[in-house]
Amino acid sequence: MVKSLETQRQSLMGETPKTALAPEHELLKPGVKAPVQETLLTPRFYTTDFEAAAQLDISSQEAELLAIVEELRADYNRHHFVRDEEFQQCWDHIDGETRVAFIDFLERSCTSEFSGFLLFKELSRRLKNRNPILADAFNFMARDEARHAGFLNKSMADFNLSLDLSYLTKNRTYTFFPPEWIIYTVYLSEKIGYWRYILVYRHMEKHPEHQIYPLFRKFESWCQDENRHGDFFIALL
Ligand SMILES: [Fe+2]
Ligand SMILES: [Fe+2]
Image (tube, rainbow, N blue to C red; front, side, top):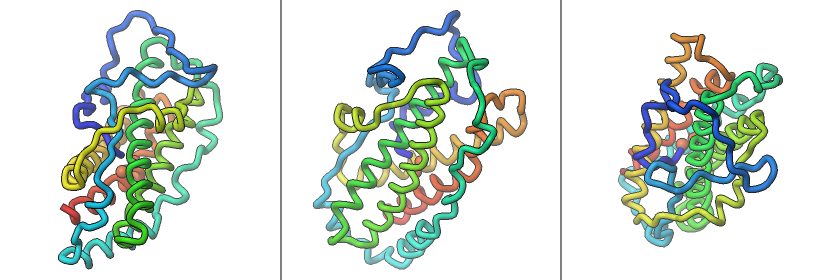
């Protein structure tokens, strides 16, 4: 997960916006939601100096990085992201401001997961023949983020909306950070992502009356992916 740090809004933990009526979502085409206006609060897309990333000297941390790559390769969550029968129902009863807030949550989450996928995939592609340990790690993390984004986008489809991810890829603004900034920023986002998912999961355990949609049940194992990603970045740091 790659989020801009400003997006850690406490409102995701429960409070719904104080709008009286649910405004219609703007559409790009039928069933495809127009992305929210880019602001400081929307998740960012990043690019970096791939040549400098390829030249990072990781020799002092090589053993630890190799161990983390093996953890990522083990792919503990490969059977986790399944839309079981709990998802197979109509969700029209989630309406009004709850529906608007929940779709907003899905969209922001999907966009940040997808942003991570794009950055990690590109790093893995560019580093493939230059820095194979890093290339492997980025490849496995891209696999995880693609799963996360895909699962969230399918949840949006339960509300008759989806995000056009190829449109986002081409049309979003990319923020350039040098590799050192990327490593620090993404380290923080991954650990914040871990805490965000696990806190939502624990909150729902304590308050099953808010468990309006089965996505939240997936967050316990899901957050472990983000935790492993964070461990990789802290070893790089
Ligand atoms: Fe993720
Ligand atoms: Fe992640």
